[in-house]
Length: 385
Image (cartoon, rainbow, N blue to C red):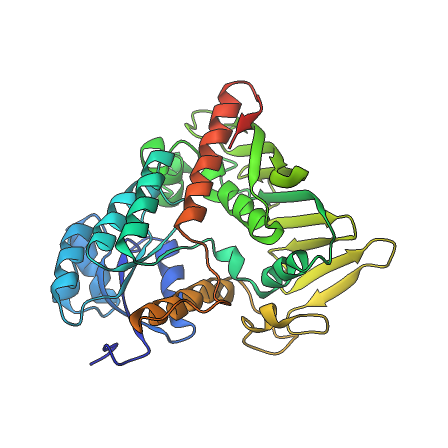
């Protein structure tokens, strides 16, 4: 049978991601890139008719097209050939309950970010993951880029010396006007506190920038001073985020995330500076990492090129000069998850070189969001994260 227990392919289910969804299609592409998953079941929409139609479009068997994630978790757990992992790609308010249902059913979870609606939900999910013994992979997909792995290794190995400054920014422009009032499904739920949570841009893209900064620098935010703004009249959640950060160990940083910055499509950028040098990476040119040793000319390190190390090479598919991008980076997260799941299937520890964001990264993200909201509401006071 396809994706059997003796196969190296993993039986995958999906919650959300049906007709009209954006990120579900991205997850499906990412899961297919390395041929390590078979999508065999789904509760693809909160509307049963749309769920069935979406499943039919994807070629799922009718009996494995479910009307709810609860029904799906119970039914798949009871099957001999049930799913081993589920991808949760719904709006934020569904994440915690759906993840809990599958973890309690003995099924590994791959979940979109931010992980939950609140710190309290996130803490409950951490406890459940740890007691269940199942894997939880959070798709902070930008950590899957080879040159981000290169940057992380250089910081870890002391190439930059002691880290002093961590600067992250993530500007977009797609919410410059009130798209949520003009029929944009993506804008509607992302600007709705009931579905998105306490943060708008801070949760949608600010958490990506924060997670990437910590992933590369190895540092966690300790305190922050935030100003969250809703520039568009009538918008209930922030669309621009400006934050000063004090990191553990004494490093300082700034984070800017905006969805109302005309001329910016997906301008995620990370700069890290230490006593010996600096690094600069742009998501829109992800195959290049600029390394600037202090007092020397800047050096351009390319994915697969001279100066690129084994951490980047492990996640590189094609030779230097052949661009890899967003889907490949996202696919690397799914491939790392697959390696971890197959190790768990075999009763073995996760290989030491397999790295992916975990449930604790999700908790860190929720603490960051709530601290930023508290700080901003209090007039930008320094707040513990």
